[in-house]
Structure formats: structure tokens, C-alpha cells
Length: 244
Image (cartoon, rainbow, N blue to C red; front, side, top):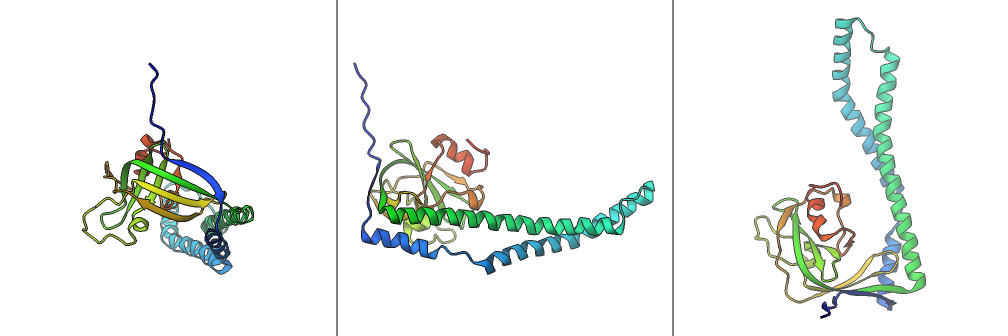
């Protein structure tokens, strides 16, 4: 006897974009601009944090060095050495901010190229999803949920509660699942930019609500397909595992 399995209802295919979809991609592309003043402000902010931290750490380091020198007779550097150490400290703080700015600029440049390719090729990716399980992740009681949903083909997709409901949940308000059971997502074929989203069917009950510990910059975006197995998303989002 041959075992048969029900064919997953979730599927994805490319098709030509209509005018409104091309307009959305063009609007996103037009909005991607570098802001030199903002970049300089971020680097300056990093340098300022270095100055503030040096005001607290510097006197303590000098006091410890003086105490050790008094106790052991060993010199811990001249004034020029301490000045160079302070400059390196400040340069490190400013440099870390500059690296973050450079990384952000690189991501923006890559996204602009992908969006330009989407517009030139004129295709979008349409995805029909049938979800079967949902888990919520919450940073604090007063903050909205981030849902991770497992589709019937094994894929995992992330959704933000505020994008699903169109509002923010109030403090102390009971958690009521807004996880969709069916969704149609349209995104740029190369850029992955979400163009439109439509939901149907009753909301899925949440299997669990777990703490959200993952750094904000590392969290999946609304509508993003997560490249992780379903069994690993809980430890990943809750900070119990470095990776899967």
C-alpha cells in the first residue's frame, strides 16, 4: 500500500506586476536616500558616548594606576601614554559608529539595486500561505507581539501584531491572537519588499507566548520568510540559543 500525503496549499510563483505594484516599488526606491547629516550625527553621538564614558572610567583608571605604582614602584606610563590611550578610546567609539553607518549604507545600496532590478524586470512574487501553527513572542507586557507562523509546507513566516490589527495593544489588554490562518503576500521578486498583504480565515490560536530577547536589528521583518526550522525559532527568538 502506497502512503499518500495531502499536497500543501502554500505556494509561490512569479508574475508580471500591475501598475499599482510598480508604483509601490518606485515609491520605496525614491524614499531610499542617504542622509549625510544623520550619518555625521550618529558618528558624533558615538564619539560623545566615548567622552562621557571616559569621564567616568578615566579617573578610576588613573587612581588604580597611581595606587599600583605606589605599592609596587612600577610605572604605568607617561602622560603622553595616557593621552594616547584616551584618544584611542574615543576613536574606538567613533569608529564603531562609523562602521554601523557604513553597514547601513551598504544595505541601502544593495536594496536600491534590487528594487531597480524589480522595476526593470517588471515581475513580482505572489505567495499564497496556509498556516497551521502560531507562536507569539513578546518583549514586555505593554508591547505588541511578534508572531512566527508555520505553514503547511514547513516554511516559517513572521508577522507584527500592529501590522495585522492596525493598532497598538493597550497596557494590560488581554492577548488575543491575530495570527492569520491564510495569507496572500506580494513582494518584489529580487528585493523582497512587501507590496501588499491580504488575510482570510479565522485567527490561529497561539501555542505559546514566549519572551522576545533577540536584538531589534536581528528580528525578522513583517511578512519575512524565516530561514530556520520550526523547532529552532523558539530558542532563537527567546535568546536561549545562538543559532540553529
